[in-house]
Image (cartoon, rainbow, N blue to C red):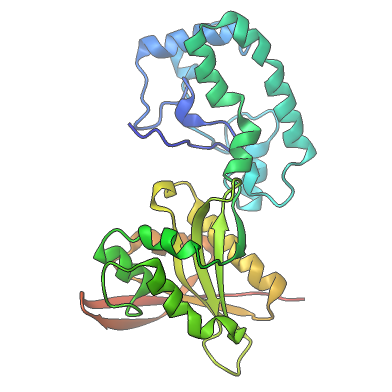
Length: 301
């Protein structure tokens, strides 16, 4: 069973929720009926609803939401409020306040086990959103050892770095040695993504491919902590990097390359707005791999 948090738009942890039935969190009919009874006892419902009504597959735009956070997140192209530049807004603060108002009754009406489950699922919204709020900072040399540890196989190494290292495994010292010659050039910008506690959770570099051309930059070495994949953090890393280009650089075009055998990364780049424009091949010790070049353009006013 996957025990990693699944953070909903408002900060609920779906993985801990007794209503959540998406695979692999399916519930028995008896479990769902017990939850329906619990919801009535707490006051979340005014009667015991059916199992179909109590079961939840997660945030969807058609779901009723008192605070309309699902639609708001979709309109802004984010997965949860913690990814919003306006977090915490007045609306989500109201959500936190109303949620907290149910906690005393839950303590009274629930068993200790039930209360702890509901606490994890619903009463830690703000902590969840703050913890999973990704921000970018300048790369530190100490980050390298963490990043190197994410490259668990030869395939992962070459998908990440193409022919830049040509050996496996690599160490943090190898990454720092690779970056060192260009760090002071002003045309190579390594960035590290951290969570709300300052933990390193992602990385990428932005560089100018052409010495005398400031109109185009290239993303490379894009990676997210493998333990956190599948939660939209890759798309969020790209969104933040695109914002970095818009706010700190003058480029109007961004490109990157993705190997054809890296479907997850390709889908992530497409979701972030990149489109294919060319193809290439890389000769590496592990074999000859086909690569799709992708690009996006930035409108500046």
